[in-house]
Amino acid sequence: MFFSRWTLFQGIIIILLVVLAFIADIYKKDIAVPFSSSTEVNIPMLMTFLFIVVVIGSLSLILYFQTKKSDTFLKHPLWDKMHILMPFNNPCSCERGFYYFLSDAWKEWI
Image 1 (cartoon, rainbow, N blue to C red):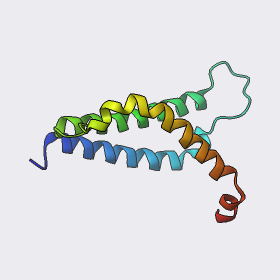
Image 2: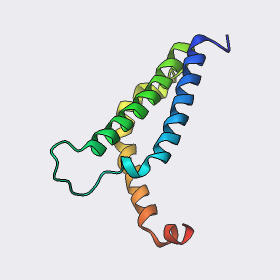
Image 3: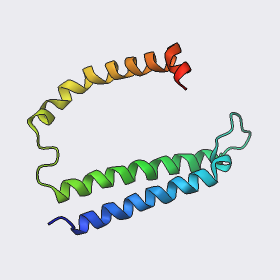
């Protein structure tokens, strides 16, 4: 079944993420966290944290609904070895990212 209730939930979450992107674009000056603040509770920092939590939670819900929808999602035998592969893959990816962002070729491309 192609269109299930999980697909509907995923569509709603994607629409929510698009709306959140527009809201973040509209209020990007208000959401920005100042470098120094004398107040005890920094409202822009709380709003930024809440925004990040909602976005990450929405993305995890999309993956959760995909596991409900598909029996073969993340069932490849390689996923059983992922806890061994990721500690080696993540530092290599970070190092490659640092190289690209700090190289002069990246600055010329931008």
